[in-house]
Image (cartoon, rainbow, N blue to C red; front, side):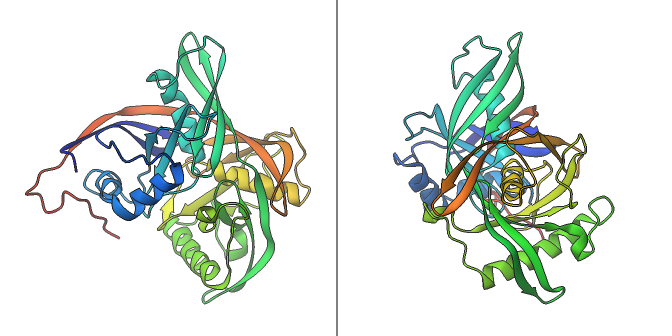
Length: 335
């Protein structure tokens, strides 16, 4: 490992994003998914170094910018968190939209809204960045096609017995259910209760169901659990949700890929129309907008594309060093 890694620190609705700017090079293989597999299998020390204590924490999130192999992409990105490497991350796309213009990854066009094409592990994502007097602002992005995978699926749990939930794909697969069905109040229940409940549900789903993406095997796994307030977020009444993903990691933002998955469910249940704007809020009261913009198919599944919008902000920049005689330099987590 190099002795120094530099980053820019951002957050979207309170959810952190640590963008690597220098210190991790020569890992790209010419194929984004292959590079992701290499990082996971051969070079995971970079993730632990940046995400874990003492430099990070169990809820840290990161982005490594790499060249793209998609012909329409401006650049590629690999996402990382406390457990591994995700396939899509909406809060990161919103932050990266600003970062790409502000730090010169793409040339400024002078347009009031500038389009940026980002290759993610799940596919090409188009971001649209508002630019006013050369200052970047809100970002919205068009998702990869999203679809309802299982509706009213029953899983058996030790604590709650049979539980009914939906499974949907919004760049990653989520189990989605009304929090109140398990006695959780998204305003008053403890975060630890949400984490422990989500962990039991995740384990039950992984043990009892096989999740497969119809087009790409690397995308076929459960990423997280989303608890909702049972509403759909229309008529200027944001729907509150909490996403618990990876190894008990809690998203501070409304979760961009989660909003996409929720709207795919709404489409399947005929609760949302094309062009109808919805709002979704997180535990920090941060709000993302979302609307269905088109219909399509993914394999045998009816699918939609979704536009998600939000705001990201800069926190600072960092330079992290590695001392050979530091026994904790590789990172650790306390649980």
